[in-house]
Length: 357
Ligand SMILES: [Mg+2]
Image 1 (tube, protein in one colour):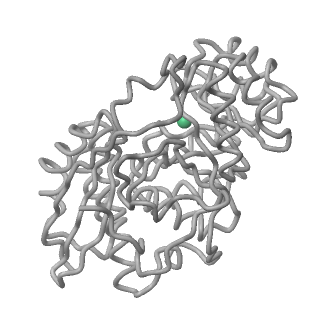
Image 2 (cartoon, helix red, strand yellow):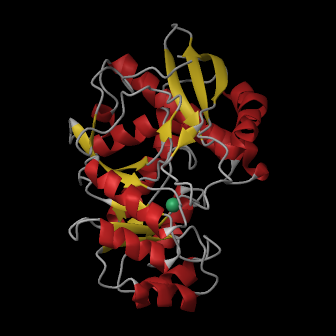
């Protein structure tokens, strides 16, 4: 079944995230919740949807898809996503093993899995595993506010919206303490550092400072994100689990992180690492290494939906990341909005929903 046509469109959306007038807007560099939605059509007229990592990079991802990846994928067999992904990786590896080229390959791969579900007449999760969850718990992934009052207010609001786990992107201890005081003690906090700490010692001091605050994990504690030895050192010294993986470019690199004992929680990103094919490879490596897998998915299009199906199928129940932002134009409207802290898994064939196009 040959791929006959690939189209891509940038979906731009402004957003609000509860930053007050006092907020320094730690995320002001983020212009919009923009993403690349990709439509892949096969010779029988069926089509599947994919998503490549976007935000401020969305134009570059589109360029990689339109100029390199789509022309090479047209005419190829749509029913063998792993083979196509490997061919594309090998052909374009000299342009980098992570980044826009890999984000574009990810979009094609997700679309082929959507097509596989549609062709089988089954929801995508049925092709990925047997758990068949009807809904998946969501965790609120708050953007950075940088002001304790704003962090506290949004934490309270997220709990009121039904979230039972909250992730912060704060690095300031006063902001983290404000969230801890605002959330019920049984609500775990995840702390995403985004590689802010410049040394292992700095990261270990931080981990000690948040001890006893019901911290589920500390994410990407040090710079650079690929310093697996440094991260392993922090993990061995810290009394809290360490998460990471959104900036790991391949399943092979995840394997090296697992071998180094650097991670308690692996966070592959389906729109970055190579789609569901790569996600499944990471899942198998994580299972063998005894590492939990909680996908990175702070986006709103087919990548979020693919992550939802992945978690609906996974043997071990894990929550899905939901970016705590209200979009002016979400790709699926309100269909994926959490209800009582959970997201319903679509039951139609493939991904089960069509994004705005
Ligand atoms: Mg992160």
